[in-house]
Amino acid sequence: MKAAIGQDSHRFEETAGKPLILGGILFPEEKCGLSANSDGDVVLHALTNAVSGITGVNILGAPADKLCKEGITDSRVYLKEALKALKEPVSHVSFSIEAAHPKISPRIPEMKASIASLLKIDPSQVGITATSGEGLTAFGQGLGISVFCIMTTGE
Image 1 (cartoon, helix red, strand yellow):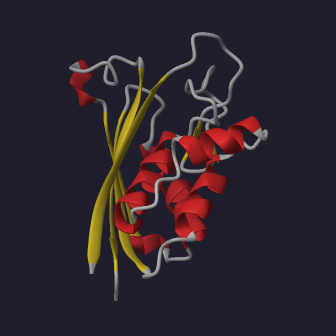
Image 2 (image 1 turned 120 degrees about the horizontal axis):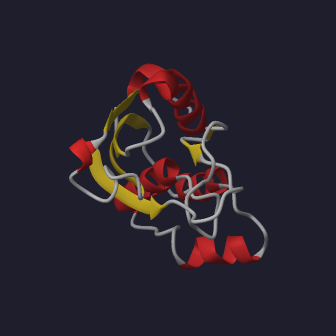
């Protein structure tokens, strides 16, 4: 069995128009997305970093920047690239999301299904929690979103 943690955070775009995507799911009610060269899916970025923690093969950074320059900004593609180096089956993933908005709880079932599909696991193997952080950090104050992901592999 192996375990790794991944983390990522992004601030919200200052201008409206970029869609907000979290865990591969569009949040159309949000006026702007997260600042990034990619689609800014901070949930999938944290997961990709956890995969890199297990495999030792970093995808976010230079490899993802190269994909962005080629016009590929979909974070699902980066995750799929990272998963190519994973030799063991995924046992479980757990996410902790800190954000003042959007409301995550109503969308958790969709997000779990999306992530499970990408990892080829059952949605019961995906845990997602969310907090506003009581406004104590920049994320809880609505300036961006922070995500931690813990992943385990093995049978």
